[in-house]
Amino acid sequence: MEYRNLGRTGCAVSHLALGTMTFGDETDEAGAHEQLDRYADAGGNLIDTADVYAGTVSEEIVGRWLADRPASVRDSMVVATKGRFPTGGDVNDHGLSARHLGRALDASLTRLGIDTIDLYQVHSWDPVTPVEETFRFLDDAVRGGKIRYVGLSNYTGWQLQKVVDLTEHQGWAVPVTLQPQYNLLVREIEWEIVPACQANGLGMLPWSPLGGGWLTGKYSRDEAPTGATRLGEDPERGVEAYSRRSPRQRTWDVIDAVRSIAHDRGVSMAQVALAWVAQRPMVSSVILGARTTEQLEDNLAAAELRLTDAEMDSLDTASDPAAADYPYGKPGIDQRGRRIDFRRA
Image (cartoon, rainbow, N blue to C red; front, side, top):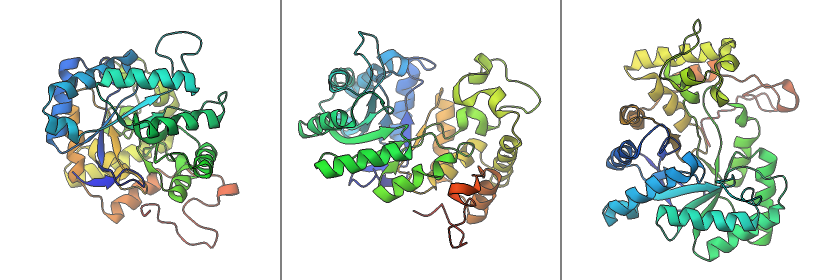
C-alpha cells in the first residue's frame, strides 16, 4: 500500500480508502467487519463513512468495529465522515446550518465511539445557509477538538474557491480535501474542479471510481442488466443508470480500452480502472466501495498495479470527455498549444 499526504496536511493516508456506504444495507455487519479487518491487514488506514449511509447504521457498524479492535489498530485508522443530509427529525434536520451540523457532528462522534473525527466533510453545497455560518462552526469544532481537518464533498470549482478564499481570509480552518465523483466515465471535473484543487492544495478522495460497476465489465451493450447486480435491481438507479450510459459509444470505447489493458496485464478490469484514478493528480486516496470481501480483495490488488505512460494515454484517449472549445479550449492543450499532462500534479 502506498501512503500519501491528506491534501496539504502532514497526515499520511493509504492511497486506497475503504468506503462504507454498503455497510448496513448491501453488506451486513459481519461482512462489514470482515471487510474492515481485511482492509486493515492490507495496510489501509482511511475509513470513509457518512451519517446518512444506511440511515446512520454504517457509522454504528464502524464504531463497533473500532471498539472491538486492539488500540494499535484503532489508533492507526484515519476516520472520515460527513454531515449535511437529514437522518430523521424536524425541519432543521438538514443543511449546513450551525444548528444542524452541531447536532450531526455530536451524533456522529457518539455512533463512531471516538472523541475526534479526523476528517469531517460537508456532504454537499447548501444554497440556503450562509457560507460564513457553516465554516465558522467548523473552525470552532476544530479549535474545540471535535474535528482535526475539514473537507468538502460534491462541490463545484467556484464553490470550492469561495470557501477557500473565505476561510483563508478569516483565519479559519481551510478545507484540505474534496470528495468528488471521478472515474474514466466521469472526467468533467478536470475542466475546473481539478485545477481548483491544484491551485489550493486540496487532496481529492474520488468516489465511484468504478463508475457504479460499469468499469468492471459486467454490463453488456446488447442486454440490460438483470438479477443480483446493483443495476439489475434498478437499471435506472443514480449515476450509473443503464439507459443513460449504454447509448453512448464512448462508454463502450472506455470499457474496451480497460478490458484490453486488463487482458495484457493479467489483472481485472476493476484494478485497471482503480489504478488510473490513483495515478491522477491531486488524488490522496481512492474510495473503494465493495459489497463483498471478495470484491474488496480484487480491488485491493490494484495497490500493486502501476500503469505505464502508454497505458494511461490509451485510457485518456478512449475516455476523453471532449470539452467544448470555449471557454476551456481543446482538451489536453494549453493556450500556447502545448500538451497538458494531467497525470502530473
